[in-house]
Length: 521
View 1 (spheres, rainbow, N blue to C red):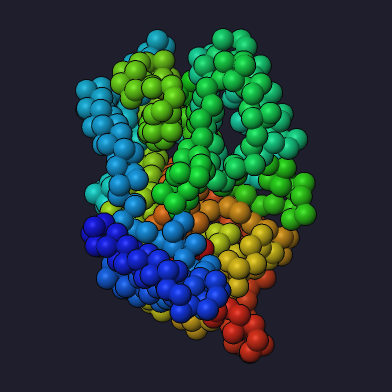
View 2: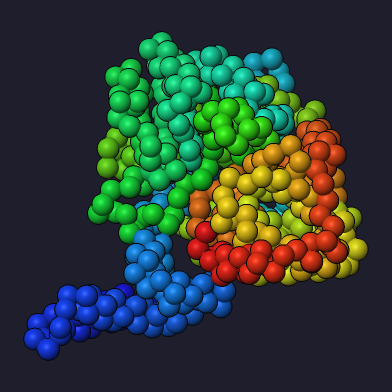
C-alpha cells in the first residue's frame, strides 16, 4: 500500500476526531475519545485489508483491533506497519549488498591458500552428491556458498559454551567482536564484560554490540567502563522515542562472537545467568557452535554488516576497511583440506523480500528421505511450514519435534500447543523435555545434515528478526548432534495423541485464542 494513501486515511480519521472535538453537541470527553478511537481503528482496518497480507496475519490484526481497539492501535503503530519495513531497512540492504559483492570477489580471487607450514587450505568443500545438491539449492535461495576448510564443535549448555568463549577471548591477539540479542548485567554478564575490558586494556580491538530491545535493561553505568577502556559499544536499533514505531518490530536476534577472524561462535545462547541454570527457570538446555576455518569469514561478514549499520551515526566505520584487511579476514591455518564436509552460513531478516529463513528450513526438510528432527523453544509455524510437516509425516518420514516441558512464555506456549493436535494426527511425534526448558534451535535431516543457529521455528524468526544459522554437511560434528538428540529424547516424554485430543475444553479455547495472536508474537 502506498504511504500517501495511508497518510490520507489517517488524516481523515484525525479530521473526524477534531470535528467531534469542536462539536458542541458532544456531551463528554469520553465520547470524543471513544469516537476518535473508532475512527482510527476503522482507518487501520482498511489499511490492513488493502495491504493483502496473509489471511492468518490479517485475521490476527482484525481480532485485536475489534476486541481491544486502543491496545490494537498501539500495537499496530509499534509492530504492524508494513510500509515502514522497506524504508527502515534500506540502509542495511545497501550495506549487505556491498558486503556480498566484495566477499564473492575475494573468494573467486583466492580459493586456495598455502600457510607457512606448507599446508593448503581450500574454501571449496568436498561434499557427497546428496549434500552438494542441498547446499546448491540453499545457495540459490540466498544463502552463502558452502565453505570448506572448516571445522565445528558442538557446545552443550552454558558451562561448555562460556568456557569455550572465555578461552578464545583470553587468547585474542588482534580483535574481539561480540554480538548478542540479550546481554544482562548480572554475574555472567559482568564477568564477560570485565574480561573484554582486560583485553582492551592490552591493546586488543573490542567491538561490542547488543540489540536495543532485547538488551534494553543495559544501563550506561554498566557500559561506561567498557567505553573508558576503549571498547567500541553500539546498540542495534536503540529504542528511542522517535524511532520506536519504526524499529520495534525488527529485532536483531543473532548471537555471534568472532575472535581474530579465526574462531567464531553462534547458536542459541545469549548472555545471562539463566543460561547457566541460575534463575527461576532452573535447568536451561541449549546448544551452541564453535567454528574455525573459512566459515568464520561468512559469519564475520554478517557481524560486520550489523555493526556498520549500527554505528552509522557514531564511529563511521566502513565495510572496506574490514574486508580487505587480512587482520580481520586472515587465511585459516588450523583447518586443512583433510577435513571433509563444509559449513553454510545463512542469514535471514527483514532486509529480504521473502521469508528467507523459513524457505531455507523448508528446503532442508524437503531433502529428507528418512527423518526430520527439530528442537525449538517456540513453535509458532506459518501455514507453509505446518502443511509441510504434516505432509512429510504422512508420507512416512520420521518427523519429531522436541519442545520444552516448561516454557518461559505462557502466551507462546499456549499458541504452540494449538498446532499440536493436527500434527499428531498426521503422525508427527512431539516430545516434551522433562528436565525443564530447552532453548536450543537445531534441525537434523536423515542424520546427515544439521542446522544450528539462532532462529526459532516461529513466524517472528521467519519474517521479522535478523537471524543466522549454520548448516553442517558431512562433518564429524553431525554425529555429536545426532547423539545430542538421542539424549534429549531419552529425557523427554512423547505426547500421547489420544490423551492430547481429550484435554480440557477450557484449555483448547485458550489455545485457540492465543493462536489468533500467533503472527504477532
